[in-house]
Structure formats: structure tokens, C-alpha cells
Length: 120
Image (cartoon, rainbow, N blue to C red):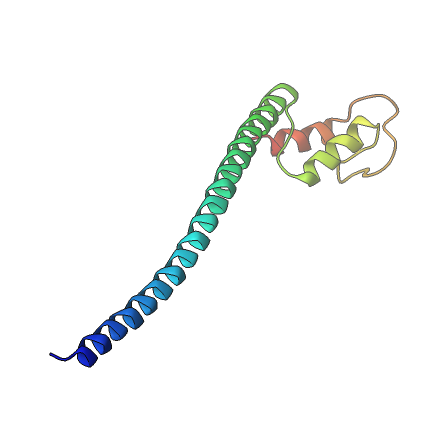
């Protein structure tokens, strides 16, 4: 093997090593991007889990409070029933006979009958 052939082989190897070094640099950059994204997603995941835990705890507390309030006050389900109960407490009839007229500070058996029918 001549000197020229050895020199060409060394040059080819040097070129291949340069290309491999360039590929290695590209892979290192991609790995760095992936590690940063993984860290960001892990942080975001942790934040979302905390938020979900807090939300779940608040939901359970709110459901418990609503359940307790319904049991204590006899509140009926739904916004419409709440509005009718509020109107009745403000002194107005909610029965079909005298709906909307003032109650004169006495209970109406027809209004109370409506509440009895709507209890759970």
C-alpha cells in the first residue's frame, strides 16, 4: 500500500469522524430539547394534579354542604324550586290559585301542598 493510499484512507476516516461528530451534535441538541420539554411537562403535570386535587376537594366539600343544606332546610332540587321557595318566604303565594299575590303573613295550605309534592 502506497503512501498516497494511506493518506486517502486517513482523509476519508477524518471526514467520516467529522460527519459523525456533526450527527452527534445534532442528537445532543435534540436530546437537550427533549429533556427541557420533559421537565416542563413534568412541572405542568404536577401543577395540574395539585389543581385537580384542590378542585376535587372543593367539589366534595361543596356537595357535602349542599347535601347538608338540603337535609337541614328541606331545599328542593333545581333552580326553579329554589326561586319558588324564595318567593314563598318573601310572602307571596306560589300555588296555582293565587300565584304571585301577597300572603298576609299566614301559611297557605295549597302552597305548602305544592312543597310536599316536590320533596325528594
